[in-house]
Every structure is written in C-alpha cells, then in structure tokens.
Amino acid sequence: MNLRRDVFQAIADPTRRAILLLVASQAMTAGAIASNFDTARPTVSKHLQILTECELLAQEQNGREIYYHINANKMKEVDDFIEPFRKMWDDRFNKLEAIMKNYKSKK
Amino acid sequence: MERKTKVHAEEGKQEITITREFDLPVELLFKAYEEPEIVEQWMGTRVLKLESKKHGSWQIETPDPKGNVAFRANGVIHEFIPVQKITRTFEMENTPFGVQLEIYEFERLTDDTSRLTMHVIYESVAQRDQVLKLPFAQGINMAHNRLEEIVSKLK
Image 1 (cartoon, rainbow over the protein chains, first blue to last red):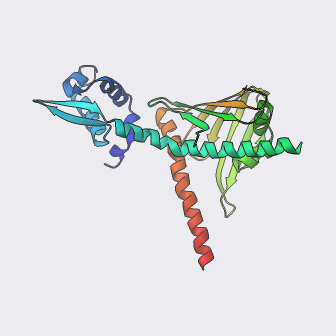
Image 2 (cartoon, chains in turn red, green):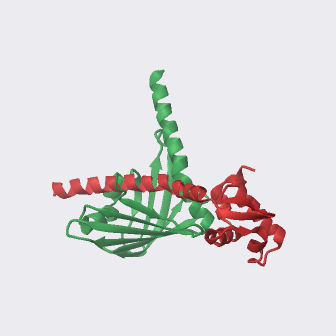
C-alpha cells in the first residue's frame, strides 16, 4: 500500500503519465479519459485510483459525474524531490570553483 | 540566494540536464575534470584511475569514516575533446542503478567565466527517478554518521 502512495512509482508508468498529460489541460471524467486509451476500462480505473491515492489527481463531483483534475501542489512535490539532488551538485560545484580559484592564484 | 546550479528533469523522461555557470576561465573548469588530484579534492573521493583520453577508463571510490569502501563507481570515456567535451559512462558498482551516459560540455562565456552543461541519460525513467532520490538517503546517512560521532564523544 505504501508503494502506491509513492509519487515516483506513480509517474514511472507510461499510461499514468499519459493520463496526467491528458488531464493537465482540462478536468475529465473517467469515461472520457478511458476513451483515449486502447487499454480496458478497469485498467484505466486502476491507474486513476493509484494517481488519486498518491494525490497527483483529485476528484471533483459535478452533478452525477466525477471529474478528475491535476493536483498542482503534489506535482510541485515532485520538483521538491529534485532539490536535494540539485543541492548536492551545487555544493560540489561550489567546492570545485573555490579550489580552482585557489589553483589560479597559486600559479 | 541565487541558484547557480540548475537541474532540469522532465517528468517521465529518462534524462536530466544539469547546468552551472562558473567564475572560472573554461580552461580551469576543464582542468578540474581532467586532473585526478583535482577531481579528488572537489568530489571528496579517491580516484583509483582516470585516463583522460578517448577510450580511457576511470574508477573512483569513497571510504566511509571507518575506512570501508562505501561507494565505488567506474566507467569508460568515449570522447575527450580538451576544453570542450567529455562523453563517458558512469556506473555505481553493486547497485541496481544501471549504467548512465554522461555528456559534459564546457563553454567559454567570457575570459573569466564559463558554463558546464551535463546531460545524463539513464536506462529507464524508473532508474533516473531512483538516482534523483539518492541524496535523500545519503542525507539521512550523513546525519546518522554525525550523530554517531557526537554520541561517541559523549562516552
């Protein structure tokens, strides 16, 4: 169950990424989303469930229909995942710069 | 604070681009990648081998505070054009992360500034995302080591 809430796990699947791209431009019902794929409807439902569980998609009731839309906040969390990686390289490069500045002045 | 290092990672792609501008002439920036002694200093690692030439190979290792090898990586250099470009592979030994292809481009901006563009391609989207998440785990380990250090001083 825990794995399913992992955002990266969720976006590692090509169909789920395609669903996110599709819904990014407009909120859609499960039926409308499924009509864009050759995959069986229950499979698409499963993908929607996973994306909703990890909060990349949010559901909204509109009359009798449930619309899926993208959860921008969660998408930003994916960005935040990258931050420690960026910081690691930034630290390394700062060190490189300091060492080479020193190297230059020693010459 | 200005972010000098930029990481571009698009969702669902198996690649990333890291760019950084340096207050260094491009020749010096390149030297930091070419000379094993300098690589050791800024990477904080031990360079076992670094043949800076086409079809050369390289290997690095990082010991943990107890002197055990905590990390070892290696690869081959496909292309080596001084002060311009390095194309090489990178593989962390004994990990499931696979081989990544790295393309380094060194650009002169002015006499005293330069830009490095690092284009890294992974075997799959899942592997890229795992590698992106690694610093999290490392951060936890480092905090853990520091804790160990502090605790051992208390004894």
